[in-house]
Image (spheres, rainbow, N blue to C red):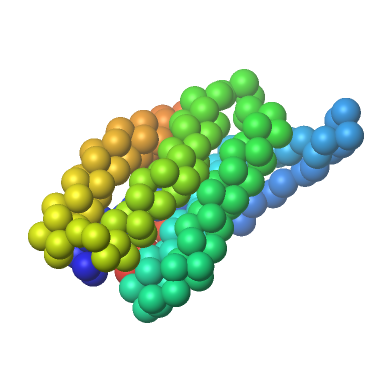
Length: 183
């Protein structure tokens, strides 16, 4: 089962500088404007890390608990965190009109919210099903993991390419984030 769960992991690319975020109020909604490309990138990476932490908590809970209520709560926390990230991204003013990184972050976070709501829910139901054989469960669970992994590759690749293009355009050195799913 650890092998299947490790398939949920994803790698996060981040810049190493501290964010410089300025918030302004517009139409009773908080809008985020950024004074630098680094601050803009760091804000997005921070949201990505929060979603990653929710996924990591779900994986840990799934591995260590037999309480489906607790596991579903961890699953729902992924959706909430990913939805929060999408909302925060939607309130961002694109840095110098550059929307690609923002759009790809929104797509990636939306993907995580959707799979937590559907596939992770199915995953839990199948895993704890008493009506299925171990072989049936293994096959169905692996099919879900394979499907998620294939779709995730597209979102990850699009996000990474947008982030690299943004970093190149604004001369930002990207470094691997310290956050790891397996730690």
